[in-house]
Every structure is written in C-alpha cells, then in structure tokens.
Length: 255
Image (cartoon, rainbow, N blue to C red; front, side, top):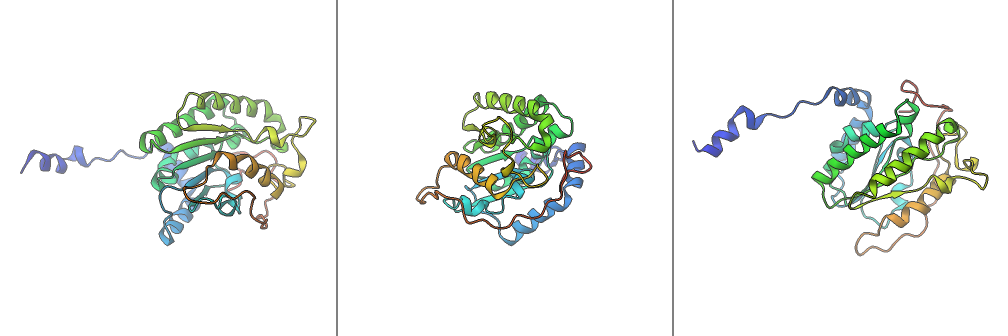
C-alpha cells in the first residue's frame, strides 16, 4: 500500500471536526427552518453563482424577493425568522457556502441587540461570517444591510446606530464588500422611524417598507451578465400575518 493510500485510510485523515455545542443548540432551535430549506433543495437545488439573502424574519418575509431582483436568474432567500447574527455565523456553511453565490447580502443583528448582546459582539459574529465566506468563496461579494430603526425597539436605537457604525467601519477594511444603509431612509424629517413603513407590531415591515429597501439595495446588486436590469419592484403580494410582539426576547422572538 502506498503512503498516500495509507494516509487516506488513517483515522487522522478521516477525522471530521465535531460540531460545537453552540452549533448543536442552534441546530435544535431552528430544526424546522433547516428542514424546510433541505426539503426545498431536494426539490430543486439552486444553481451556483446567484445572489443570496440570509438573515432574520425581515428577509424571510420578503415574499417578492425573487421578483424584485428578477434581473438575476438565481435569487435565494435563506431568511429564518427570529434568527441572530450569531445564528447566521454558525450556519454560514449550511445557508451560504453550499450554494456558492456570487453575492451574499446579510440582514441580522437586530435580534442580537434585543437579546442583550453588545454591538461589538454582533461585529465579532459578523466578522466570523465574513472570514468563512472569504476563505471558502474568495470571489463572492458580501453586503451587510444595516439594522433598521424599528419603532418597537426605539430604546435600542443608540445601540443600533453604534452597531451599524462599527460594521460599516469594519467593511471599509474588507475587499469585495459593502455596507448598505437602510437605516437613514427609514427615518422621517423629524429623525424618527417612519410609521407607515412598519406593520402594527412596529417591528416588521409593510410593503412600503420593502419598497424602500428595494430602492436602496438594488443599486448594490449588479445585474447578472446578459440580463436586463429590473428597475421597479414586482407587484405587491400579501405578507403573512405577524402577531404584535414588541421587543423580541429569546423566548418570544418570531420563528
């Protein structure tokens, strides 16, 4: 037996790192969402090279996402409601790397702050996310969508601004990345969140809110080669009903 064959059969070569306790806990928490993604992939695995959105319920509830970015032949929505930046970092290989997208856009951090994490902890988890994507998909562009100014979380606005600021500063040091500011356009002339952009729970967005998001984000998502750019969002479809939640805690955040 050659040295290469012997090495290939050795316990060291076959060893696979055990999942961390944090990963296993998150996997149990999001079991239904992960199983739904797996089922969808078995039915039709998305092609490589698309644009992928990952994050919390704000991404999950963007029901017109594929139509709004129809200038891309492959648009993948991997939002799972109530998730955190920490969750996205833990699942980066499951929900991002495996699809080999050309561009990944992240919206997370909102729930982290609501659960008591600090802006710096959100940055740390996002940096882990970025490092994994950059090491495994070096040609993939990464965009961070800033945390939105939800009226139900007005008490967190200073921490939200701080988180947005330090992540924007971090991304200025990274190649193939950008920070997308949706916080500012969601404020009115009085500097307060625009009520018409939010559902009655004052946390999730109305169709008008998603139109603001599309108007800002579309300029950061370049049309796929050979595709004609879509300049307007698709016609509205009803959003799923969301109960009023106020500040979302670990126990009550939407799934």
